[in-house]
Image 1: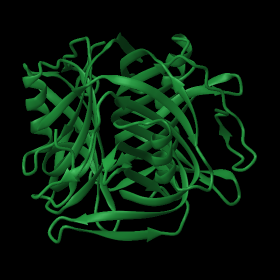
Image 2: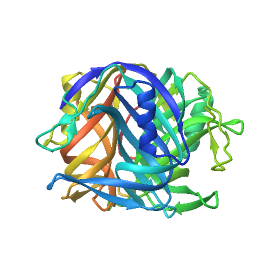
Image 3: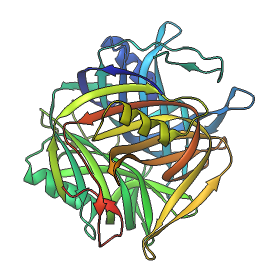
Image 4: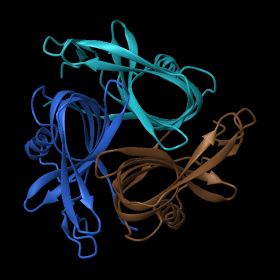
Length: 140
Length: 140
Length: 140
């Protein structure tokens, strides 16, 4: 396991905007606050969601769209650089009103309500192509 | 996205009491320690659970009761003020012994065992009625 | 609820090794860095997983093996001492490419990719047998 010791910097609590994309507004926040490395934790609800699943054999993402309301239980992710922009890598677990659950790598989701804790680190994390997995990972 | 920069204050590791309500004992702890704002992260097991789902159209919570044992994988939530009391807003993902999962906004659950990390912030978070969603959210 | 106030110490971001056991490499990291108490949060993907479920009546763990690829959404756990070794108590939620989910207490899982945030505390957490649950819990 490769790792980097980091110092905790700024911390935030946030309320996501109703009607806006969950991931996009985290990325906009990261750009506005000049955050180069962070982890975040969220809970709330969304109106719909497109989740991506990485086919480990074919090494391609497949999208699945869900056009229904969900509770977010929870969202866990991190902020780092990818292709010259800040990217919020977000995995989200979603539940329906009968309690049933879907989950995956978040592409887009329209926020109904959301609460977030963000912890910034004093480093710059930048993703680079990894040959083994064909994913963009951190060289640490 | 509205947000507030906060400073981290006290941190705790905790073991939840067997046989007591999961959320209630976090709220009792928050009152005993005078915690006005925190996020927490937990794992463990419960004997039963009542989960709430917010109907985004009708803007009402619906309860679903599960009278069976579950692993808690995980619980993520926060502590803030609501109607003059400390409220532990908790979303919980629960799994059965075949691996199947239910999840949602936690009302009550009888703790079998539980481990918690709590991070307090140097602010007071107080929920207020939000007209758009009819939920009690943080004005940040 | 029993609890201990702790001070945050070292923090790390990590990239888990492809092809190695998820939990084992966190335990190796904890041993290499002399970490006696921590919580961690992760996301990523695995190729397979063996999850354990604690039968609360019989007070025994039952194993369920899943021989398929999953997204990790998320993994939440902690590091403490158990029987003279560092143990990474890990609960993991896993999703398939149709979004369906299984979850539980992680025994083993072969990492495809993984990203981790680790927060160390200035205390030693050591598990001891708990008579009520027959589990190894923290005396706090």
